[in-house]
Image 1 (tube, rainbow, N blue to C red):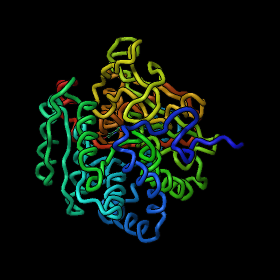
Image 2 (cartoon, protein in one colour; image 1 turned 45 degrees about the vertical axis):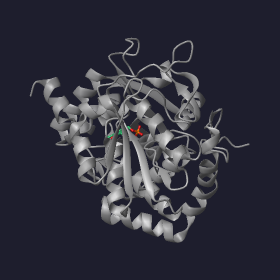
Image 3 (cartoon, rainbow, N blue to C red; image 1 turned 135 degrees about the vertical axis):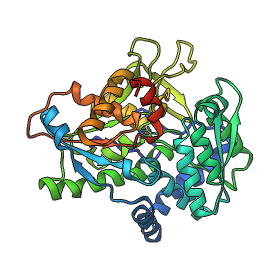
Image 4 (cartoon, protein in one colour; image 1 turned 90 degrees about the horizontal axis):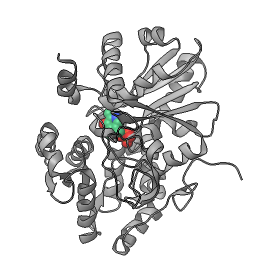
Length: 395
Ligand SMILES: *Cc1c(COP(=O)(O)O)cnc(C)c1O
């Protein structure tokens, strides 16, 4: 059988993935599993999705040849400008897709969980767009440290509910969201923000984000007369921007895929989010994947200077890409990422999100030939991170 890097019909990528959820969620899950591909393939769905990506999100996002960055690193480096999307990152591609799906499933209310607030804002945005009621669960600690995003969600009409159990952060917010869904499985659709969770979420989110590599193919053809770059580099938190940037290249093994995780204060510092290096097989949010955990299976709190990368697991497809060797996994520390973010700002006039800065930091760790075509997925813009940059560099 031909090797596959896509989900099988049970949502498995090799040994990873699947759906491990409480009995009470089975009916919901099954409806979603049975209908997502059918709905996504309907011509009217495709047309509405495409039109919103164009007129609301502002796609296609440009593929920009970064000349000064290229000179510095000795390769042809292109930036896929997801930072120019409405709301400032790739996350909106997925939330637009899921809100259209929720409408077709006859859902009345949307729930979501958020850590840094970016996915909460992207969800609140599409709920306003679609006129749907929106509740976002967020850890009490995260609410305090992400005040601007909480304000954005409220302004967009969403209700923000504090998760006050456990460590009062992302995984507690996720537990609250799942509890709410169990209480009203018929009316509610749960919008997950990355390629994580039980089947069909990882595959569904990857498909919504795959517009990134779909555009890359024709944009490279226009500029380089080939659809295939030598390298694609993307940062990985849960893994959705990377999954979208890799999607149409997974079966073309000549295209080298590079995933960059956050190693915080260093892989061995105890304060990191380098899941592929540190993780062991385990189940989180309903799927089997690589997970940072103690000997007895307690989740280890991840750490990164970038709020979007401090997730203790990684999507099951990425676990499989790591295990199979299809993608190379690198990591960048806080310091390396911050310097790479400053470098891009000075060389190209583009201030990246700190998550994205991790992908840029990988350029220093790689060896290129001058003719190599390298695409870095510029997952988001740095406006939200200005305070962190200011404090770090004493600007
Ligand atoms: C949320 C976020 C990420 C991390 O999420 P993935 O699912 O791994 O893509 C990366 N970059 C930006 C700008 C983000 O907002």
